Image 1 (spheres, one colour):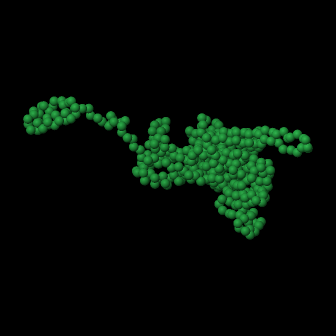
Image 2 (cartoon, rainbow, N blue to C red; image 1 turned 45 degrees about the vertical axis):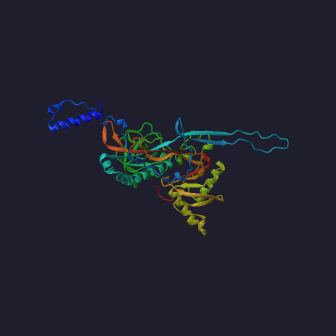
Image 3 (cartoon, rainbow, N blue to C red; image 1 turned 180 degrees about the horizontal axis):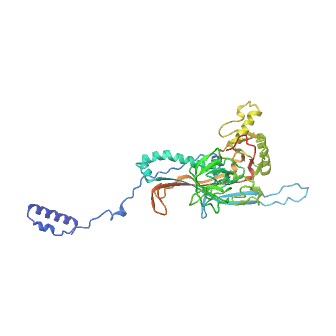
Amino acid sequence: MNRKVQLAISAVLVLLAALGILPEAALALPIAMGATATTTDYTELLKVVFDDTYILETVYDTELLDFMPEGEVKTGSEGRYFETSQLYQSPGAWGSRSENGYIPEPGKAAAENGQISLKKVVGSLEETAEVLKKIKRDKAAFLTWADEQFPLFKEGLVDELDRQLVGDGSGIRARVNDAAPATTLVVDSTVGVAGWDHSLMQFRRGMKLRASPNADGSTPRATVVTVQQIDWDSNAIVVDDITDLADDDYLAEGDAADNSFGKDMMGLAGLIDDGGIVSELQGIDRMTHLWFQSYVRDMAGADLTEFAMIQTDRNARHRGGGSVDLIVMSEEAFDAIWEEIKTDRVVNDPRSYRVGRKGIVMYFGGTRTVTYRTARKLPGRLVYGIQSDQLRKFILHEFVWDDTTGSLWRQVVDSTGRKDAFYTYGTMHGEVAIKSPQKCWRLEDFRSPAESI
């Protein structure tokens, strides 16, 4: 019996009962009806509707990353990586001969290739469920919160990139400088290098640290340290726990689950070096291949002058054939050069130099223009001479929030169970490399004109 006939019979029976023609008992008899469909039966046909996913891709503007040319990132079976190729010996031979003499016997070319994996910078936020409910009342509410909070997060990201770009890839921020460590923990040796100041510039309030007696982070201390305050007057960080810390421990970002030892992007300290800090760069041993060393000049406490930098540049140019067009220096070094310029000469034509946040523009060797600029996280007694086209930045993507699950937020789960809290995180894949370190130079350990932080 089809459904139309069933409905017609049902209607007639109800009408007859209402008129008193059909006994009420007849209505109790079973009536043959079709199966009732529910939403469960149609699950596979129902549309799944998602709200627009809100993705914030942070555009960064760091002090150092902007001047570096882009490099090509390749994706292969070994993961994301980039390749470098250094031709350090040209083919051919040159010489003078007498008539009917023999042609110079040419040498062969020599090159080295490096393949380096990209580093992963990760950032995260976490909120309780109550906070999340308040900011997600509607999309406008969420965007308002994001407009306020994400820019602050971006500032932290830029600060982290600036820190990594003056380092050596080790992840080390400083070392403990306290024979009897206290919660007001004195630190020194920025990026782990003895004598490099500005160590407090490597820390942020609220960050977590792991300590290790070894520069590679092996056998780390069990204690997870939280930075509560920065004590500038004592050159110390105020921390919550010093249970197993020891003098000369290396400090890096980290928590109970993981840490940053050996995971930072490479910075100027490793790129422009003679092997004293980073002995192997991009898979090339600097002790074996001396051409992969930069010229490093130790001023041994002498004053920093314009002539000292020009002399350093000349020595490096004679050795490596470079043509420096950018000098990156600490703010103390900039002050020293600026004071010298104002003191020992009268500037009649203001077009011969420009003063501003980016630095001073001067001439080296008569015709070569060199720009001076500062980097606030750079140790006070450092100056780098850079041939810009020798550096490369390999950025797979800028920092982007992860929405793999269809949402930015994920529920926090620990060993006990699910928590009434949610977290979100994002990543950035990138690395910095150099083609020919011998074309660049570093000048260090000059007398600082001002007290360093």
